[in-house]
Length: 344
Image (cartoon, rainbow, N blue to C red):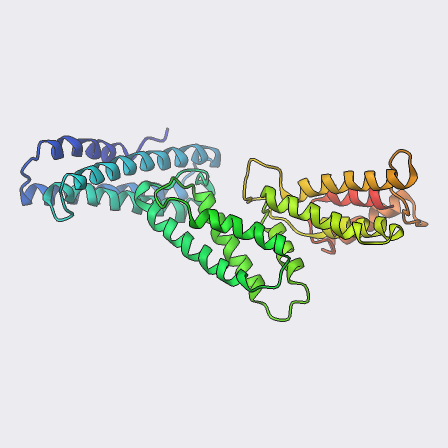
């Protein structure tokens, strides 16, 4: 049975409030002893956690235990942070003896948090909140990278509507209160988002930067409502300016392009919303239905299906061969089979 290794630190932190309220006089010997105790306790906790990496504990146990310890760190760190902030509002400074232990506790708790992130990444709750003591620095870093990407997009030759989608997201990051709560997932997503797009727009000689940025946003699973709407409007606009006979082939080609674009399934702008390719694909299929109905005036049936002299078994073997040889950029075999069923 795993136990709460942080209960000693949590109990010590809880005692800081009374110590500050009473303005206790703390001797150098007492401070030194308490600092040593906190430091040793943190070292002990790290050793216990390190031993867990090489223990016989099952993964499902660690998936419950580490987020629990993560939450204790968050609650204790936030309590300590608010205590320090309140004391400073009353005139205490960092060099005041009454704040030495709370400040040390805060640093140690953040260090334990960093230890968890480094060594227990697969068990870490990415939707967990970043402690208040670390939020401001993370938000500052996020603002810097968002501003850098915004500056790079200003003069880039991409579709204006697409640029607005990206700039709106970056603007929301830049203008958010630096002390507002923040999850690890949201912070990590922005960093991946900015790094990927900065690399995309910095590549010289791209024949179609709009398409490159679009593919990057699909890869990042940027399931933001404004991006989904822009993509739909962009396809509808392309269709409207084409001759009637070319519209269905264009939509089928667009569907093929859509299905060939890789999408990360382990990340998303909003994990509570369907992935971007699922949203757009569902819309695209319905859009094709409507276009076919407008032309034929009857129930939906995709026109101009390819005719092959292959049996079902031969076709299945061909798809399997292409899949195993890595011809498809996507790995969802169900989606691939649906595409062949739709196109043939």
